[in-house]
Amino acid sequence: MSFFKRLKDKFATNKENEEVKSLTEEQGQDKLEDTHSEGSTQDVNDLVENAEVKKKPRKLSEADFDDDGLISIEDFEEIEAQKMGAKFKAGLEKSRQNFQEQLNNLIARYRKVDEDFFEALEEMLITADVGFNTVMTLTEELRMEAQRRNIQDTEDLREVIVEKIVEIYHQEDDNSEAMNLEDGRLNVILMVGVNGVGKTTTIGKLAYRYKMEGKKVMLAAGDTFRAGAIDQLKVWGERVGVDVISQSEGSDPAAVMYDAINAAKNKGVDILICDTAGRLQNKTNLMQELEKVKRVINRAVPDAPHEALLCLDATTGQNALSQARNFKEVTNVTGIVLTKLDGTAKGGIVLAIRNELHIPVKYVGLGEQLDDLQPFNPESYVYGLFADMIEQNEEITTVENDQIVTEEKDDNHGAK
Image (cartoon, one colour):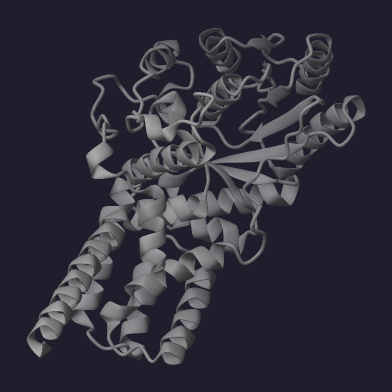
């Protein structure tokens, strides 16, 4: 089975069963942009009230159910994969249009696989924020693969390019996207990131996701320096239906964490999500503040925080990489939440973060709705980037195969 066919079979919704509301419809409400409205409670209300606009799964027939009336695991996984595929396809529309248009133009301009083609491909990928080192690794592997398979035409290299992108992401750890959360303990997630990247919104969406999974969630308002930060987090807590532990503005963030952990233990909380200050005067202050917070958390909960997630705005491109490098210097970042990925045409930033900073992407923001914060999956990401090309390629392959079968039948009939 070809790589394109496997991705299509896994993520593409069957047309005859498709009952999907367009995931790219404009909902009419203003976007919740932390950059402009960190303190705006009305935008948060609008977002939460419109959160139930979701992709509908395909209709189920009697054949989909087991004898006990429950849907089979295979069909459930198929529907979930199709829903995820639709989310990534809709959320990465801008990047997909950009990637596919540039790749199509490149292949049209360079018909033969040669050094000129690879140099042009390198330039294309670098402008898509894939990152210089990652691009060099990718194109070098493509050169070797083209030579190994004796690929002469650039058209035949399409599928190999997409396949290599997935392989490069997985070079380090196949399970790196999984969150370090366990049942039976208080799991502590520390959220870090500069102001304006969507950190508070991400905390609200994470709380919503975990609550929908049946977890008891609590929030800690550790950003005591920015005006309005505590109130905004409280609004999220009220709308999502989770408790928020806070003190007054200007309080010691470590004291907030101490109170939050005690409250979480007393109430049997499964997941405590801790907000932190997004802007301090210099790296030294930031390091001292984060270390103090982590020290308090670790004393109360051994091995905590279990995750330290850095929020980055995908629309800022290379600036997001610089932020990641800075935070990596001052604290142990275990994963990235890449927000506003639907708002950029340069979705290659995902690869740069993973392969140049060696930090896994845990979640990506693919839209405005609460359930548009999705766990990152490399294959879903690649499908979202190249969905049109993948589906078109498989349709062409199917037609060509049908023609071959028809010709063989005609030849056999003529021989008789």
